[in-house]
Amino acid sequence: MTTQLYIDGAFVAPVSGRSFPAVDPATETAFATVAAGDAVDADLAVRAARRAFDDGRWSELPVAERTATLRRIAAGIRAHLEALAALETRDNGKPLPEAQWDIEDAAFCFNYYADLADAAEARGDTAVDVGDQRFDSRIRREPVGVVTAITPWNFPLLMAVWKVAPALAAGCTVVLKPSELCSMSCVELAKIIDAAGVPAGVFNLITGTGPEAGAPLTAHALVDKVAFTGSVPTGRKVMQAASAGIRTVSLELGGKSPFVVFADCDIDKAVEWILFGIFWNKGEVCSATSRVLIERRLYPRLLERLKEAAENIVIGPGTKTGVKLGPIVSQSQYDKIMGFLERARDSGARRLTGGGRPAGMQTGYYIAPTIYMDVPLDAEIWREEVFGPVVCINPFDTETEAIAMANDGPYGLAGAVMSDDLERCDRVAAKLRAGIIWVNCSQPTFVQAPWGGYKSSGIGRELGEAGFEAYRELKQITRFDHHETWGWYLDE
Image 1 (cartoon, rainbow, N blue to C red):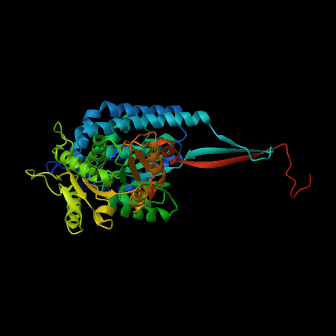
Image 2 (cartoon, rainbow, N blue to C red):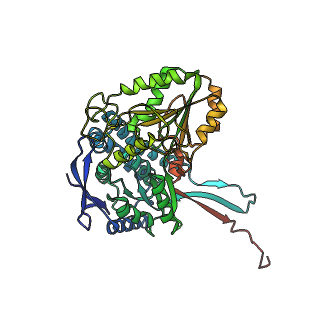
Image 3 (tube, helix red, strand yellow):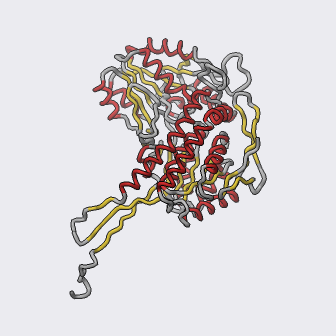
């Protein structure tokens, strides 16, 4: 299988003719050849998107026609759900049921934003009372323009759709650059979009590395907005590049999310949600609750239960029935996580379970579910994002202490609290400095609710109505009553 770029309504080879392999992390073997775009291809894609926006072929299309096209894209995703999920599993390594869930959510996302666009059109402009009846003032919302969307490898299709669907719904044109580690499902998305009848230039796909394809897109003078999901260091570079043209930027970056567990909760529910909060999607989740704080009187018993449950998680290829933890996405990410684990040995943290490659699994980028306990609060493993199946656990004595420990860090993407005392849950939720708070659960994500973080975890919001408005500009239109005379320089 050899992929192509999608530029100005056509599938084309990169100008350079270069490519790179797509590697199955379960077998460590290449299964496809991916087109490697660079600055030349990026420029062609942006210029196509610019022409498509400026001539109004999409932004000025009747909204009902635009949303009908989005619904055809949703139907196309659903029609290919099983094939897309299988491809996602092969490219990323996640268990097939998780991939199926992601693809279904991607289809729902297109329908959801089609509905929002229809509702926005029905509302029309918003009237503003300026206190002077001689003036009619209104707020109009218009598409921001040409959007560069740069997306990560942990939810390859879904997180691309989080940007593409609202941008298209708002009337923008898009250049999508997925991660070079997992590009395959986005190539299939381009085929579905093409088949749905999206006009040429409205959606473009550039596959390639960050430095060669992503960086030129973030710095391109004809781009109006950059939407990026990825690491904090890369997010800084994206923001710096976009600042040269004063372009709008939205950033969804890293996290080291806390999970505060009080002793009055149901222990079985606590075990389930702690495991789901860190081992779902192999821990390759920006919002993963990878710092767990447990009230001291529950600490020993819950640790014992967590160790037992983690050691019973079925590890293996994502295509194998019953597997709940697949391989890490790539050799580079595997090595990065193993580096964290090696350094953790010298930090004073106590390893409860895991900490390396599972026994008997010599092929594939596998790491056993790993739990550290009694972790020093200044340890790297406690403060920095690992982005893998690794969780750190510490005890606390008081609610005030738990909140202080939870908020002590540079990130603020998400947080969770578990207790049978719902008033206490509400108090803690109000005190946690993060953009997403879960009560008596961890990680449920809904298209209808806003997604984004505080502090170093990013700028702006995706999903929900906020995710739609992120791709629209506000325009004030104020009209003076033409029957009146202003009479400032000229006498009446």
